[in-house]
Image 1: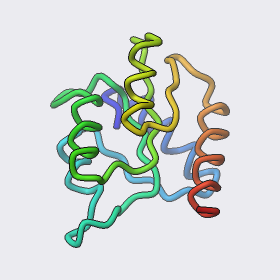
Image 2 (image 1 turned 180 degrees about the horizontal axis):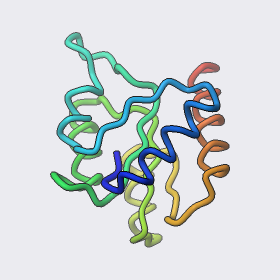
Image 3 (image 1 turned 90 degrees about the vertical axis):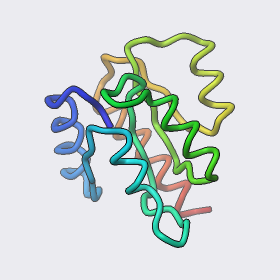
Length: 121
C-alpha cells in the first residue's frame, strides 16, 4: 500500500512484468481485510507498504496484523527512515525496510529473495 498513485502503478507494473501477481490497495483498512481469509490463513505471500497512509499508518496496520498473527512477509518503504523505526519494524516481523526514493531494481531483488524464502520454507 502506498498513497502516491504514480509510485503504486510503477511498482505494480514492474512486479507484474517480472511475473508476480499483484493486488494494489491504497488504503490500509482495505488491505487489512484482504490479507487474511475467513479461516484465518494468509491470503497473500508478501505485503509492500508505506509508513504514511491516508487512513492509518503502516505501523498501525502492522501492529493490527501482528496482534492477529497474520503479518505476511512485509517490505516497508518510507521517506522518514530512522534506525529506531527500522529496529522496531524488524522486531515486529517486518522483513525489509527501504528508504524512499529507492531503485526499483532493488525492490524487485528483495521481493524475489523473500518469495524464494517463502517457497523454500
